[in-house]
Image (tube, rainbow, N blue to C red):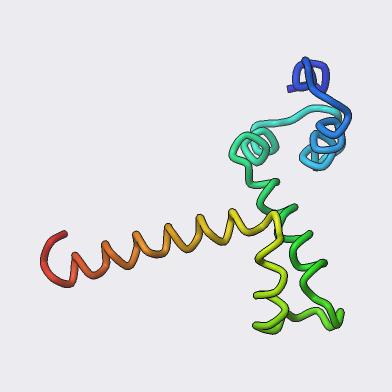
Length: 103
């Protein structure tokens, strides 16, 4: 997938996104790069990096529970946390059902 194919009707911010996903810098998205873009994985990584940069108030490279709680309320990463919590609850429900003999 080339930039011209990718960019039909898309703004300049998307060009930066394309360049971040184009890991080898050849101006094309290979299968692996396309998968990272199409799956949305690059958005998750970018949101988490932004979240960590904003949340680590004391810049020690670690998050305290307080830093995480304070930052998660206003972060773009919040949707990822919600999705993970929901998926975890499904896993827990399936585990409980299996243990009870319902699987």
